[in-house]
Length: 185
Image (tube, rainbow, N blue to C red; front, side, top):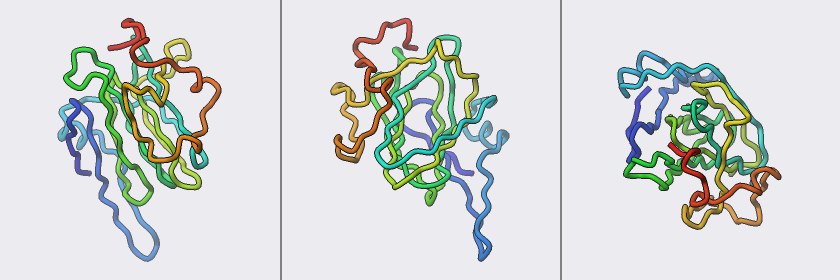
């Protein structure tokens, strides 16, 4: 595993060593010791989540607020997605800015998202299976979100807006500028 820094403090791209032969491939998707040595972060994951979605499904932009904040390690098991994070840390030089990364079953990259970020993704392939580890348990009452097309964020989701499929809940999310400070970091 090789860890690459980004312009966002404590956000890392993980590049896995994929060992392939005529049988298929093998990779070690996470190693706590190597991750800690390369990042200086001591993250303990307590919950794994997985979703399957069709082309155009956009999940996000979500986060857990307050004491239920979560760091995540995200990856694609099958297909391809555009993964997007938004910095919600008020003291950060990158507050309100976003990072986009193409995650696929071919590139086998992962994104480490620390606490203090909204997270979302849109499916670019016919279907995608998305997997993520969390360092805190989910609490429905702590769930927050930002509408995917907030003009202040100017996120290019790389598919036509008419192809985007949102849940009823995600259709009602507010703009970042209207989020009360108590839900930010």
